Length: 150
Image 1: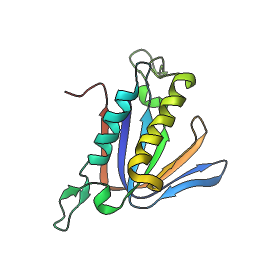
Image 2: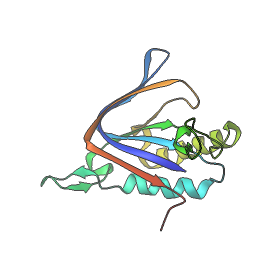
Image 3: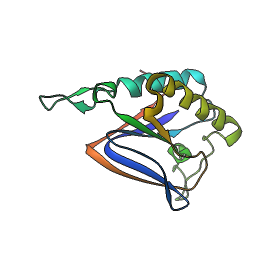
């Protein structure tokens, strides 16, 4: 699994021209699920995301995690994180998991995060055409690949 995490002061996701979900201070997490991903990848990434100390403390240093600022998460499925551009100019997505593999893992990812932060998690809709708006705070943008733990 791959995630791109952005620290935001606010964010929203629109579907069919209407706001579907929105958050205030927190993280936008774009989640890509690959062919070889499993529940171990979920648990690894959830712990990393929730433990990231990317929010500023009273001294202005990035030293606080999501819980310390009572932040929210907007989770968006993003198969294009598995784009390969090695050949030509049209990206290939052969390493991205097809919906029959990705949807159950996406749903499990949601349940695991919710077990920690409850209703502070908001999502888009898997496979929908979504418009994501955000104010990247910092900017702070971090990539994590669950297959690259070393």
